[in-house]
Image 1 (cartoon, rainbow, N blue to C red):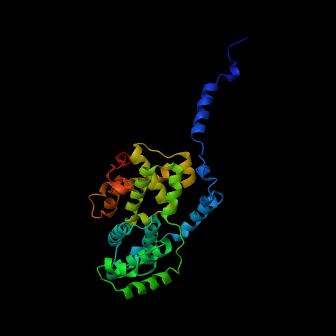
Image 2 (image 1 turned 90 degrees about the vertical axis):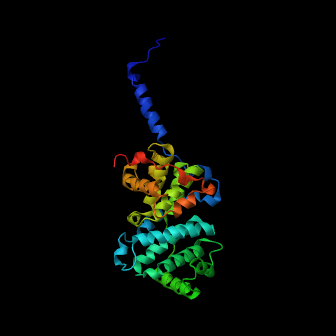
Image 3 (image 1 turned 135 degrees about the horizontal axis):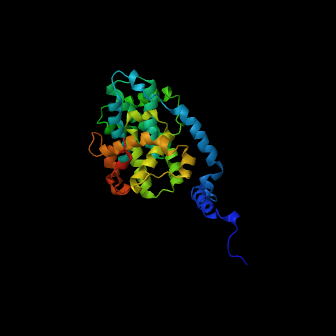
Length: 299
């Protein structure tokens, strides 16, 4: 018997290497473990997120809406959201409530001119409405009056609530970055630390007015990619991540570099609400993680 392989099979090694690469980069079925869980809705999740991607286009506000505001600006918006993040943490409400609050705030300011003496009131009312939409036990109007140091009355809150709801035509159902964060984190097979760092980074982005130019799904993908790079010290974006997010590593890089800059100034900048929130044991002290400087070295 001849022990030598025929010439026709001499390229097996090279083919095997290529096939191994294909195998390693094969798409992971991220819903497989939930196939028997009726609450996961595996049968519908693909259609649901396809719908979210269509709807997010209609939920985006003008990235230049502050130009129509005569008394407030992007920096004042940032101060307000930084404060809302602290208030939200003290109330121990769901993450969905925070993201919806910022979403309602921006949509309202995109349509309504607001004086600087009413900006905090707008933030409080957005927080109230989001709480009513997402929470079992939302904040009470009187509690919001108290945390504003009684700058506003109960009547002020109720009147602004009516105005905001009418301005937004009672439409609260647009997808925020939160829903995409949950799906994309599942695609990365994230552990607790990656999840917490990802939310730390995207909350830093909530404060930044310039990030309004990006869609919620794009921001979620960029924050998670940055978190992966930050934790693991290498650029990491699998075929599964690209498939489920719809964004390539290259398309995210410009935004990612900005996120690294936000991370860098999180502790020493003027707005430290997000840093203080995540510099706590319940979030694994992820605010102490060093930024991924290697991502901006070629800037």
